[in-house]
Length: 528
Image 1 (cartoon, rainbow, N blue to C red):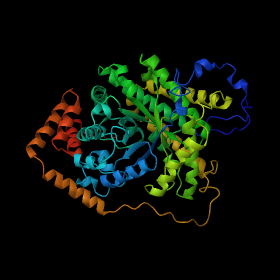
Image 2: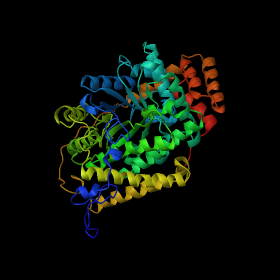
Image 3: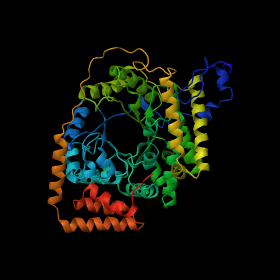
Image 4: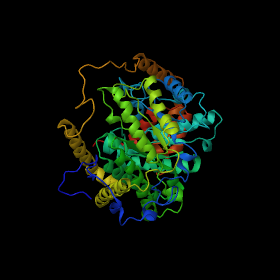
């Protein structure tokens, strides 16, 4: 290995990189224990034996804006362009449990995602989509249970039974406290809702991924790659423990847990991160929770290329960044992938940018040759050394979090947030000081750039969505609404599963905001 006195380049996580890696780097390394075969323990090489040689990853472009009708049209555009899965973004009021006619929703309706207030909105969102054939990912957390139930009810109306639908709700509240901020309730009631979802889906929606435990937003907040997987896996441990403590058998719900990773520019560290995360999850589920079902031990994950890496300067350069990040995700064994539009540092992606982003995946899948064999990086002196080091450092973080009482207690102490803040500061300072080159930002700049036409948001959309929600409320049976919301509150005050009362409330035409308000009345709201 390189002389310690020589200044070595480092990864985004600060891991030193030697000038050359030889067999000495893996002198005591056991390939059978550390690698195994694809589809076999410890799943370093992938969760399925054939990986992409028999089927490519799901190409799932993230979309959602304005009205339900507009987002439905974007879904159809992407499916026609060859997308193989849907992924839906919701606006801030929907994420925070407010209807579009609420005062706190003003100015935010349809801005960063689609507005969904009512069952009527969900019907429009899913109109003419093959819900028995396409999987749908919904990036929703605090109100995830409500959106899942809406989806299930609309599917039933279309003649598709709950056991035929498949997809994912993000439903990862702990990372909201750590990194993102779209929480409603305090951590412990939020954990109760999550375990209720686990139980409900295990009985009624067996093909649904009940949670997408997300490192993506932790990375977007400024974490390192090591922190991303460490803090996310610590959150996952907390979710599994909460479900076990609630009386669920680990093998009844763990096979439907999924993960969501960020793809950044440091190519080999990113590929190593994905591989290490699988091996760590196998160890956690085997040794910590005693899972017997092999599917409980498989870390299946979706990847989105790094939004925070996109630059407003020379935005066409982002096409290359996204391609590099996507290739790392594919070589790391992702199950599905979203590629960002090159213009997303400026606005929601235009159709042109969305098509190029999808074509990036298709070119990798069909033209690059990287899918012709399983895990082509396996056995590389550099990649295997990096995978081991990422894993070692991530275990150190998890041990610290365990010492603090677990992820929830550590969040309450502000530990993860402080660590991320320090990492984000160091990263930004390295750019400001010129130690880290960002092409087009602090090097290779230009004096004048061609303007990029941003995606337009019609302000009339908010007016129309608000009016539609008000009209929906005016046409209901007030007594049925009042009774259903009272049942939601009573269930929240008990230890019964909340989803049944929520489903009855949706059948009575209660809105997302009204159901959320009923839970606020019981659980309160979280203020850090």
